[in-house]
Length: 76
Image (cartoon, rainbow, N blue to C red; front, side, top):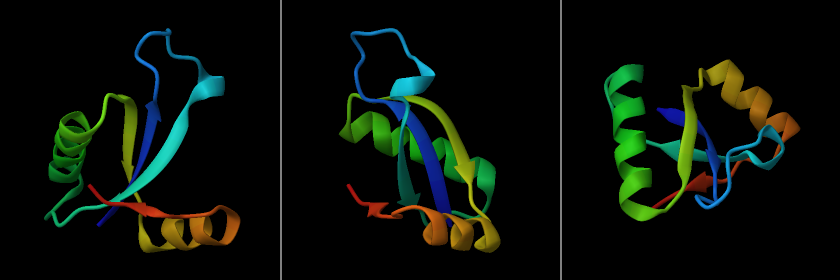
């Protein structure tokens, strides 16, 4: 399942919408809730990012993202 993660890369500044960044994670999970928890754990273990929101992408949403943005799956 692919998840879209909204995050702030700098912990020293207060979060602002203008500095929100996005990454995509491919996680082997059974459902959305498990994926959100696993996504937060993976990001906390491998980065210093402040996670704002994690959203599971349906096949249609993923296709839309691929058509309109550069979707690169992040691996840790």
